[in-house]
Amino acid sequence: MSRIVFEKPSWLKKKIILKDCVRLNNLFGKLKLHTVCHEAMCPNISECFKKGVATFLIMGDTCTRRCGFCNVKKGIPRDLDEDEPQRVLEAVKELKLKHVVITSVTRDDLEDKGAEHFAKTIKTIKDFDKNIAVEVLVPDFLAKKDLIKIVLDENPDIFAHNVEMVPLLYEEIRPDSDYRLCLEVLKIAKTIKKDIYTKSGIMLGLGEDDNEIIEVLKDLRSVGCDFLSVGQYLSPSKSHYPVKEFKKPEVFDRIKESALGMGFLHVESAPYVRSSYIASEYLKK
Image (cartoon, rainbow, N blue to C red; front, side, top):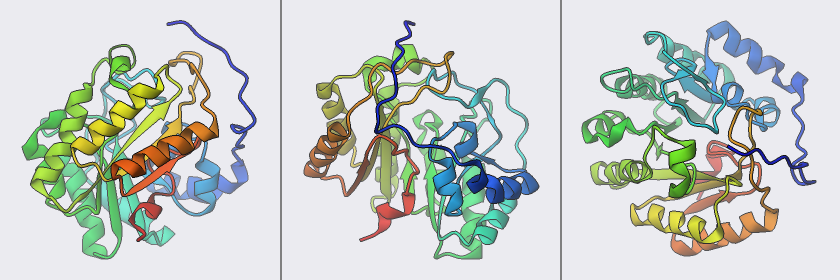
C-alpha cells in the first residue's frame, strides 16, 4: 500500500477544541458508553459535543472486521452488556435528545450479529418517548432478512447502512465486506418496511473517479435509498489506508446536485460531512 503524503488544503483546517468535549466526555465516562465520535476519531467531535450531540457506539469498542480506513479497534470483542440499552437511554434523557443516532461495531461473533441488541436499544428509547427520532446505522447482518426484520420491527425512524466507497476499492480496503451485500441490506429494508427512510454514505479521496461515484449513487437509488451523506476521507494514522486526493468543495456541491437530481430526498455533501453529522436535518420537511 503506497502512502501519498499531502498537505491538508485550506478547507480542511477544522480544529478539535478539547474544552468543548468535557461535559459529554464526563457523561459517557460515568455511564460507561462508547461513541463513534471517539472511536473513529471524528473531526467534528468538538462541534457536536458542544451542541450536546453524539453518536452512540453499542456492543463494545472492538470490531470483528478489518477495514483499512477505520480507527475502531479490531479483534475479539467482549460479551454483550445487557444493561447498555438502559444506559444509552440515561444519556438520551440527560442530553434531552430528540434525534438519537445509534451505530455499532460489527459483531460477526454473535449468532444474530447483534440485531436483538439494536432492537432492545431502540425499544428502550421508544418506550420512554415514542416521539424521539431514532436513527440506526447498522452493520450488514450478512444481508439476512430475518435479522434486518428484528431491527425494523422496533420502528426506527431511519435505517442506515453505509456503502462507504466505490466497489473496486473493497478488495483492498474492506476485505471482509461486499459492496453488493451492502446494497442488498438497503433493498431488504425497503421490502420489509416500504415506508422506512433508508440512508447510506460514501467517502471520497480513496482513489475513486467521478464516473465511479455516479454509479454508486445510481446503485443506491436503484434499491430505494432516500438519504445520502458524502464526505472527505481523512486517514486516522500512518498505519491506515492513505488519502489519495483531497476533493475540492465544489466537487461535493456537484455530487449533491447530481444526487438530488436522481431523487434522493436529502443529501449532505461537503468535506467534513460524516454519516451521522447534523443527522436531525434529514427528517426536516
